[in-house]
Image 1 (tube, helix red, strand yellow):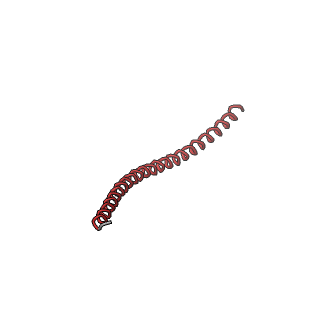
Image 2 (image 1 turned 90 degrees about the vertical axis):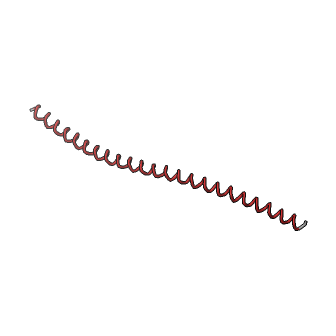
Image 3 (image 1 turned 30 degrees about the horizontal axis):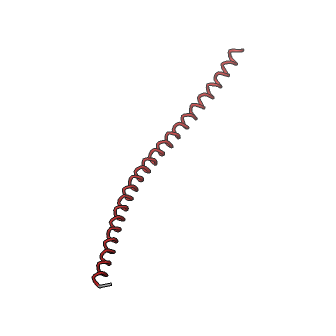
Length: 86
């Protein structure tokens, strides 16, 4: 193999490496974009989950209050029934 052929072969390999490097850069750029999209979606999920947990806490507190009122009303009804039955 002549020196010129060897240099052409090396040049061809360098071109292949450059092309592969360019493809990798493109792939990495696409991956970065995908990661940013996933991060935004994850942030939205965290925010929504936080809102739902806050809603659940509020609803549980209101249910407890309503339960106490119902119990008090039931007690009042029982007392009124006793008074009326006498």
